[in-house]
Amino acid sequence: MKKGIGFAAWFLSAAFVFSGCASDKPESGSQDFEQSAISSIEKEQEPSKLLSASENGEVKLFETTDGVIVDVNGSQKKFDWNILKGVSNPQVSYVDLTGDGKEEAVIILVTGYGTELDTNEAHILNGKNLSEIKIQRVEEILAGIETEVSQKGDELLVKAKAQGKEYKFSKKVSELALMHNSDGQYENKLYFGNVILNNVKDQKLTVDIVGSVRPIDDVLPDYVCTVHVTYKYDQDLHEFAADQIQITSDQ
Image (cartoon, rainbow, N blue to C red; front, top):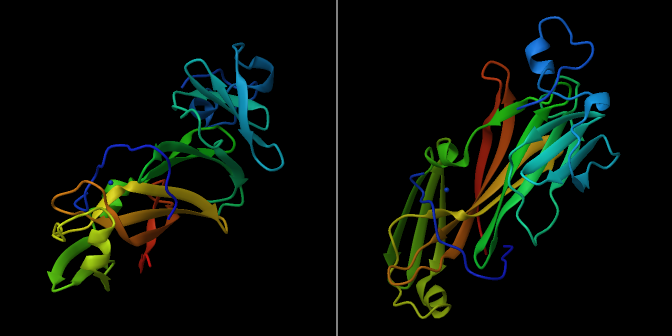
C-alpha cells in the first residue's frame, strides 16, 4: 500500500474515516444553474496558474490566490478547494459517469500525504453548467460496515461485514508486533481514515479505503485489508452513492 514521508495524525474509526455570470444564452428552465458558470468571454481576470488538464484539454484546473478555477470547454467557475503543496498534481478527467451520454468534469485532489497517510477527495461537476454533484461521504459508507478484531494465541482474527457479506482474515500477532515493538495487544475493531484513494476506472468512480488494526500501546497502524467501493449515480437522489462494496486482505 502506498505510503508517504513524514507523520500525520491518526484519525477516523470504523464506526464512522459560486459564483459566476450567466452565459449569454441560458436554456429555459436552467437559468439558475447557468448563472453559476462564467462564459468564455467573461472569464475572471485574476492571477491563475494551470495545475492540470484532462487528456484532450476539455477540462482545465487553475490555481488562484484563494482557491481554484475549473474551465470546461471555455466556461469557468471558481471553487474554494484547497490545493496541497509539494504533492502530485490533481487528476483531471472528462468522462460520462452518470450514464446520460454527457461527460462530467472530474477533479481528484490530494488532501493528505505523509507517513501512514495517503488521502484524496473527488469532485464531480456537471459538464454544462458546472454545478457540483454530490458524492456519498466515506464516513457514511463506513458506518454501514461492521468490523471485529480478536486474538487467539499468535493469531489475530479480523472480521468485516458489508452489504450482507462477511469477510474473514488472519494475521500473525508476532509478525505485526515486531514491526513497531508492540506488546502484541490490539484494539477490538478496525480503524479507517489514513488511506482513502478515489479514482476513475472504466467510467466508474471508485474509492479504496484501507482498514488497519491498532496496537493498544502504539499509534502506528498495521494495514490488514482494503474496502473497495464502486459508486453509481442515483437519478432520484441526484448523487453518487456506494453501489458495490468488496473487502480484500492486504498481504
